[in-house]
Image (cartoon, rainbow, N blue to C red):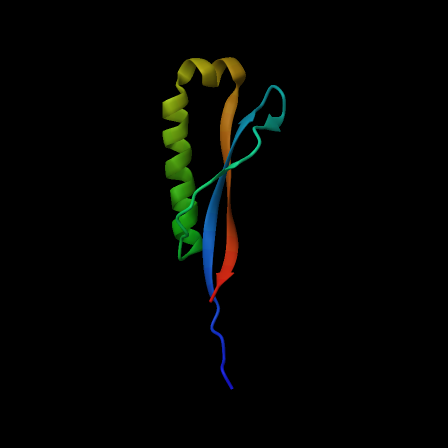
Length: 78
């Protein structure tokens, strides 16, 4: 009998959202690099969010009241 061993990876998903419209842009941004642990994915989420805020710049962030939300979606792999 062959037994499959499933390994859990996490995919980082980011959304740019507006506090004014209470909506997020669609589709979200999927990071293609899978993370081995939830911890690594969450760290990457904060790092990538910060980079996105820096890239967008203060003016648009203030004008549109933007923020970045993220989630780490678990995915089982063989």
